[in-house]
Image 1: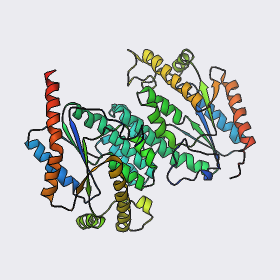
Image 2 (image 1 turned 45 degrees about the vertical axis):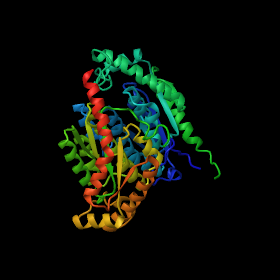
Image 3 (image 1 turned 120 degrees about the horizontal axis):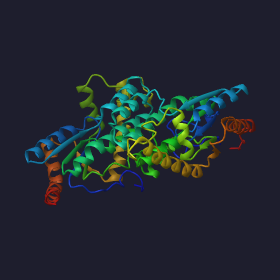
Image 4 (image 1 turned 90 degrees about the vertical axis):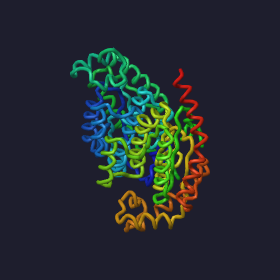
Length: 235
Length: 234
């Protein structure tokens, strides 16, 4: 018995028992402050002596260029877009996440399949279908969901330079301008993430708290989990 | 075929979708080309659809192949991405407009090829759930040795993924290809049962096969014509 179980579908050639590392996921919508918290958490864990690796969305060597091009021209069908993201995710899974877990690293992941599922559902994908597509992903040891509501999100996004075309769902579009579309789009994304939070048992953290306090809380939770180790289940 | 898998999208369109499947060297492309000529001659609007059509996805696929970066999983997903784009932007709009869509390879190619690479069979079937069911699917059954003879004599160089060298563990492309094609062949045979594919004996004369093909689709063409005419009156 291993700590890692896929969400339902085995990956060809992978033996879950080989994965001795820890998979820690930080989830949350755009602009909630995930990057800051991943950085802080990484520093904290490295100070404690853990070997830490890190990854995020759309950073795969295989598909990131294609995704960028497709976004610029908006030239892919919406279902194809969902599958392009899934390809990108699978490439990262097999070339970054799994090797790090095999080598015993703590793999910090700035968003995981859940954001991809939420985004796809908001763009019209069938929920059961897209969850099944991502059932190849190993289940994380923990998912920390930095939760925020739209009214608290708006000032943050403004202070970070304003609304992004995609983060506002303008490809859909959901309103007559960026602001309106942002509100509608983010409300839907957050709604989907909330659903996933209960379905997949995320640890929910209030992201409106001061950065220091939230990051301490996160650090405590993760280091406690790592220190406790995994229960050894006799096979 | 389970619910939520390929086969569950049975939406009806005024156009018709005919697809051919089979291993390389089964002669399916020749048959489809002849069919297209015949249909065009009879005045039908024909759309010909092939794998690897979307330029953006194609660039990523080529990159992955060139660098040998594709695993069975990403090989499966990138082809599903491309296929999905082709369905959304080419096949479905053409069917809505009343065209006769001819596809050289369809979902069954992916189901056979991906599972031959070790991808989970039920996962691939759900991956392709979005694809419309063809009006008729023809499987060109050919003995492995005959297909190999046709392919290996006509082409000198087999590509890495085409030969299945990523999964067979063989060091020569020809030997790898032989093993990989035989795995694909046995997956196709399962699909014939599961999806009730229309089996064509690909060892018969070209004209004999073509006549059988035309006879099989003819009733569907008449139906489609009626539906398209009804559509135009609205």
